[in-house]
Length: 271
Image (cartoon, rainbow, N blue to C red; front, side, top):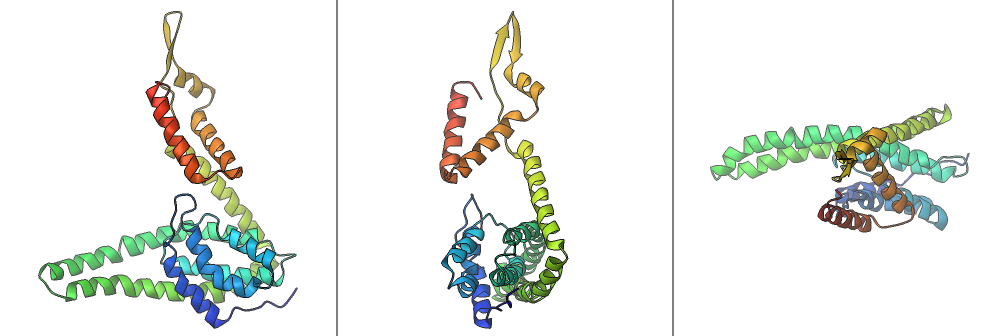
């Protein structure tokens, strides 16, 4: 195994400073992916700058779906930097999909923690304490609100990034050696598929409105479909969208097609 090339302090500072722009190019297809790739670019250039093909793969890797609360995100970014170092040192044996797997496994739980503390706690506390002062015309009101939101958030960001990078490097080396990382990556994939499967019937709605008359009896088409398999149509719709994405169809085009399909289907009485 090649000696792991450590990222310079200058590069790590650049990565950290860029993370403030995670939401700078948010989109509904891959959420914060563009911001994440932009954040990682200084590290990727230092690690893969002399290997164009590896550089392309790394950029593409970080353009995959990512969504998390911004405050705890530096912890994930720090771990990602440590994993990219290991991948750059041993590309033949290191599984780069584990990088995406770890990101996917961490972003959900940390998003819940970040939203609860920084949107549901500190923000509310800051507003509750600062609002009366602001209404009274006291300049301390907005300053107090800023400090209550800013200081805890900034501490979590800075120490989270440091812990993720420094602690993550040794931790990931250990769990890579005993095979735990591969197991965690596979578990994250399975859990992700289960979550997506459970979301389909609750978030995707597609019901037939047609009624046919057979021998004087009215038969509801949706009941026939449900008799075959409940939520079959939403499942087929998701598979169709997934197939279109695999064929490089833009997510925006798919969304417009779904809107047109819904409008026309409702107008002709099908949906």
